[in-house]
Image 1: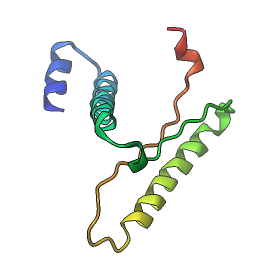
Image 2: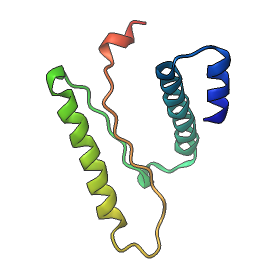
Image 3: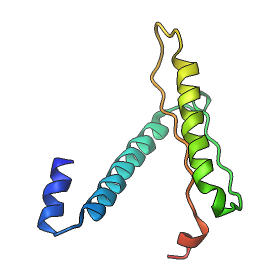
Length: 103
């Protein structure tokens, strides 16, 4: 983040632009890390699924809150009483694809 702030200052980015740049940078870093892991990992060790649906945008805020709740609930369930185990990453995305696919 320090490096991002330094570049942001030199590029005269607004605080909002700097925040967005930082988020995108972190997301890209996590995506690259996940891609490297998937290349090495046997499919039986992971669960990955995708669904594409039409969404009423008036319900997006509620959907995002449900996702946050689900992640916390699942993390708590999986972490409860663990003495020894593997580290897993839980990733749930809600991304509008149609409006950006053509760009």
